[in-house]
Length: 265
Image (cartoon, rainbow, N blue to C red; front, side, top):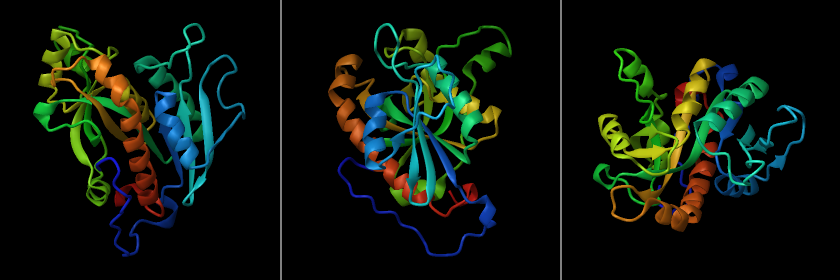
């Protein structure tokens, strides 16, 4: 979906074949940065929920509400207590996902956020991708079998009807804990055949798989990694625009989910 496009969901009116009790009711969105999450929180009119679902000592925040018949929870890892920056990366993403799944028992988890994209793989700034597979590029363990474990390539649940209805792009996602890309990272990312690169997706998907919770990873492109510009500069310049594209897509995704089961995606 291109930035600025109106939400136009092409939904056939045929009855859902799945039993009613299989319909998606509770959706958990895990979002790494406040700047990515707050526009969606405001658009959905969610409220910060201070009910004790997380330990008192953690900075994690939960926003909750009902929209289009769905119980929606957005969780973010919050800010670092010392430096005041967003708790980005795989550790925070995995921890908050683990705690939220345990507390909220969602039918579906959506990891929504921003990512870098590769021009050579067809990515443009503002594009929104659904990840077809996730892997790591910074867990290098050069020992037989452990090397495959380190990459951790895992397919995500198929969502062909959702992708077609919203006109989203598909691509493989590679995750690592650095915003930049070392030569070693680049080599693994290429071997992962990745189109997009982020800092938490594979970790969130790993936790979802542990609990057999279906997960969709939706990523809006902030910067073109192979475009010749410094990643940090382009990321900061385009974060607001990418967050807006993520907002529009997120609302359309939730609209599409209403009354459907996982099999209908």
